[in-house]
Length: 109
Image (cartoon, rainbow, N blue to C red; front, side):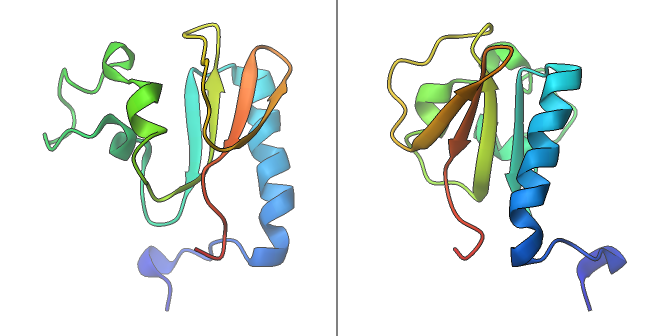
């Protein structure tokens, strides 16, 4: 049985889910968002502090770090208005409103 009685998404639904993720970005224009299995966005900060905490501020989020180290994330959307990315070591696509969809993993990993 899935944790917390959550249904989750199936492999065949993942492309549709990614499209939905991009659509959310086009409406809300968040600084960063991600799709991960059994993880939340706090992992990208690499702090071990309990949340909430001052260390979990956008100013403390460094793409150079989370793009270099492996994570549980499959896709990350980064808004370049916040900080331009010069080197992205993964497949990525730029799209509207300064968004970059970075494919950091796969559904099968």
